[in-house]
Amino acid sequence: MMSDNEECLALNVINESLKLPFVKVNRDEFLVRVFGNDIEDKNRLLDVGPQVLFTKEELDKKAQNRINYLTTQSSAVSFATGIPGGFAMAATIPADVAQFYGYSLKLAQEISYIYGYDDIWTDQGELSEEAKNTLILYLGIMLGVSSAGSITRILSSKLSTQALKKIPQKALTKTFYYPIIKKVLAVFGTKLTKTSFAKGVSKIIPVVGGVISGGLNYASMKPMANRLKNELSQSINYTESDLEKDLKLLQKEDVVIDSGEPIDIMNSSNNNDNIVTFNEKSVYERIEKAYQLFEKNIITEEEFSELKKNLLLKI
View 1 (cartoon, rainbow, N blue to C red):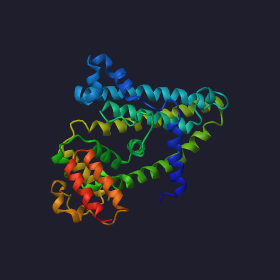
View 2: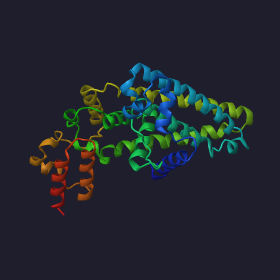
View 3: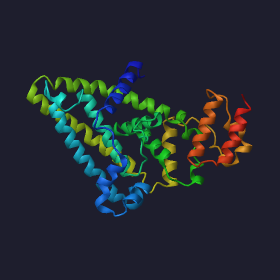
View 4: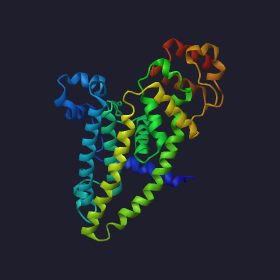
């Protein structure tokens, strides 16, 4: 099992990488830069997303171009940070590892925006806890955690309300994807230890070390980015059949917590005993989860109000 130290290490690297000035991607500016020459109505591009206006093949090509560009750029910077003394400070990068994952997180944002995923940054330029978890899931996909790809597609799917009702209630809450986050951090923590050692050794000989460091960067990052591209590409034309496959994969990995049939939320008045269970931390958390269902248009405002009223009666 993952130790607390490994989890702290993984989270610290993510937090430090996010502080690097090049990591944050402005969704609107990025989409206009990438697709601006291919479409006249840029406002529509920003409103509906490129996944509505371009074919899957066109999106795949755009994503591959960004992967090729950023992995090459990242390796060039890694060459500089691989040379002891001076260049790392000039590039405003505090550490080679932070730089590597900084570029990985930047690339993850760009790929996700190409495939129509939501902007993770608030209007104030900050990350919510949910947004940070989204980035961790992206990183998990890059590291080969298959369940991270499944839950990402499920949570972002634009399926009909009828189809989404098939998803277990907990699939739309933090308690559902929290085990996946823990799994990603475990894989990440292990990889960090190995990567940090390899990068440290590569700096023993200054010039050759720079070449080795850059080579490690490119060799590691490109397949990671391609893995994310391939997984997010599957969200285009995502069907009910795809949803069922992803749910089965998660059930196979013992991620889905609900053991019974999915709750029919539209008939919630007859299933209050199922919805309001007492293995949760608090009534307020259950109200928050119900509100998340309302925000995702899974239940109506009237149904949310009814659920909230019933929950408050339990206090």
